[in-house]
Length: 84
Length: 182
Image 1 (spheres, rainbow over the protein chains, first blue to last red):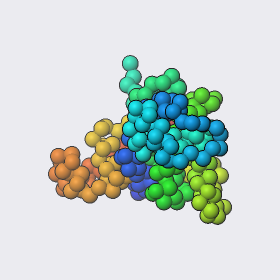
Image 2 (cartoon, chains in turn red, orange; image 1 turned 45 degrees about the vertical axis):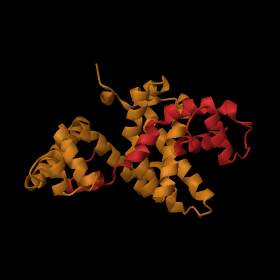
Image 3 (cartoon, each protein chain N blue to C red; image 1 turned 90 degrees about the horizontal axis):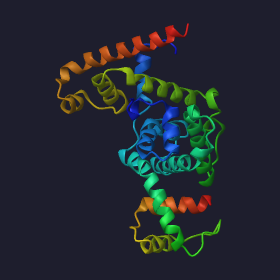
Image 4 (cartoon, each protein chain N blue to C red; image 1 turned 90 degrees about the vertical axis):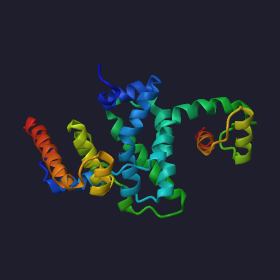
């Protein structure tokens, strides 16, 4: 590692501010959200690749699975279907 | 036995693959600043776009951990995934992707600076807890002496000198690491 002046160190330390706390909390929840997605998929009419799914349909499926249609779950489900 | 925070990046990646959710939380915490900096500084995404891509990167990383061949390479693997996701987002928005917004690994100056900052951030782990906290609050979180003093229960008039001593310790540590390599 190179030798740094204190000024250079200060500049580098400023380069990495933390992201907003709720972003980090949401990312920490990903394993639980993925499990919930597995519970919801059977309640979707079709998970054919490339099929556009309306948000309302996703929310209905989430509720049919006995879960709450939190925005993070809806977004993660949309991402899952887009990647399928 | 090492606490989870004392595990190497590779050990954390391996534990995540085994389904250890505490390891996943550690991975998110360890790399969240790095990914955030790539999105907002190297690619200059808006906060709104960066938030979406940030979640997308961690979601894909979770799904694709099985494809990571070398657990020790989790940092460049995440960086590559972040870079691709950012470029996809810029293209999907219909914006042109200027050449200088597509960093080419280590050769790109901004990308290199973020990597260097991450190394310094990780090196801070060796500092005493109070040093780590005060330096991070002042430089990375941009908190005032007054805010830091109130949060940590120390006189704000002593903060500048504490920061200076902590930076000197960090510098000394880095020079020691550098010296070992010679």
